[in-house]
Length: 174
Image 1 (tube, rainbow, N blue to C red):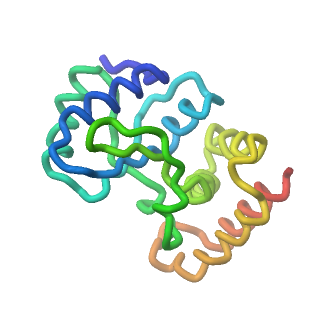
Image 2 (tube, rainbow, N blue to C red):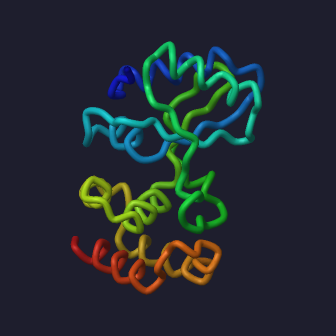
C-alpha cells in the first residue's frame, strides 16, 4: 500500500535518491510535491519528477525507492502536457542539494499553465494559491501563455481557444 507523501516523506525521497546518485543531475518537482514543499497542501498522492539529464542509474533506482518508502513517484513534468518556454531551468526555484543531486521546483509558470490546462479543481486551487503567495504574477503568466500559444499545435490534445480563455480567467481573478 502506497502512502500519501507529506513534507517529511518528500525530503526522505530526496535524501535517498541523492544517496543513489553517482553523477550530478537536477531533479525538478512538479504538482503536489511543489504544493507540499511550499506549504499550501499537507500531502500529495504522487511525487512527480523530471530528472535532467536522464541518468539511467537514477531512473533504475526509483522503483526500489518507491517500494522502500511506499510512495508513488511518477516521471512527469509540464512539458509532457504543454509547451514550455526556453530557459525553464533558470526559472526553476532551487530547493536543496543532496549529495550530487540538485532539487528544484519546475518552472512555476509552466506548472501553473499545465494545471490550468488540466482544469481539475485541485489544480485550479493550486494556481490560486501560487498567485496568492505571489509565486507567479498574473501579467507574466499571460505573457508566458502568449509565448507558448503558437506551439500548441504540437499538443493536439490541447484545445487552444479553451486554454486561452481558461488562462485569462485564472490570471485575471486576482
